[in-house]
Amino acid sequence: DTGVSQDPRHKITKRGQNVTFRCDPISEHNRLYWYRQTLGQGPEFLTYFQNEAQLEKSRLLSDRFSAERPKGSFSTLEIQRTEQGDSAMYLCASSPTVGNEQFFGPGTRLTVL
Amino acid sequence: DAKTTQPPSMDCAEGRAANLPCNHSTISGNEYVYWYRQIHSQGPQYIIHGLKNNETNEMASLIITEDRKSSTLILPHATLRDTAVYYCIVRVYTSGTYKYIFGTGTRLKVLA
Image (cartoon, rainbow over all chains, first blue to last red; front, side, top):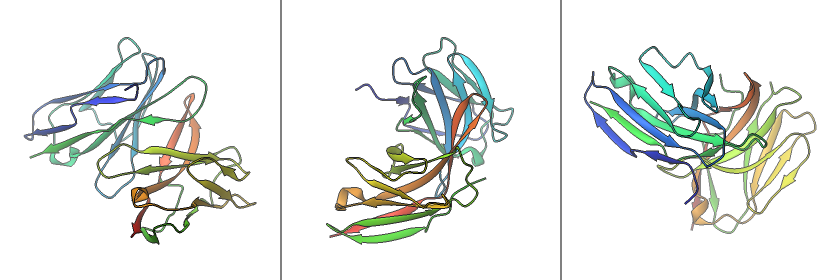
């Protein structure tokens, strides 16, 4: 399968713990996006990478959140000192340089107890 | 802030056309309208997009009003597998890329 993949698909953690999610975009897509989706809402933009450069961060991305894309391929999203309000689906999407459609992965569902 | 408004839910009989409306009255002249759908517990799936002309592909048709303040997604022959949340999205350009602004979506239920 050559689509966007995310790992893990589900994560349950206790408040205060750190978690890290991984996204593998479609090969040769140099644009990568992270979104957060809470129950009953549409996805909300968090951050965007072009190759390894993080070019935009939403104000939703507090200091406890950090994202990286070290070699311009896969990306990680880390949440430190998780809070119950961080419980959500975290979606990753990628798009090619030319062309605008974003291809979404299946998401990582985070539950903070 | 969402730039689109959609009804929260709709029902459609199997085999009939599903017409999903969307208002985007504040859309700018160069901003496209995209439609995605999301089946439970999966990532959003692309359906169609357009700027001002009507568009059709193998999945759906998109009708955009002349003033571009609203659009309608048409699934010509809905099946049970089309049951999903449908998002009307405005694509905005910022920081060197295109960003999707999602609304809250319409939950479409196709009835047998």
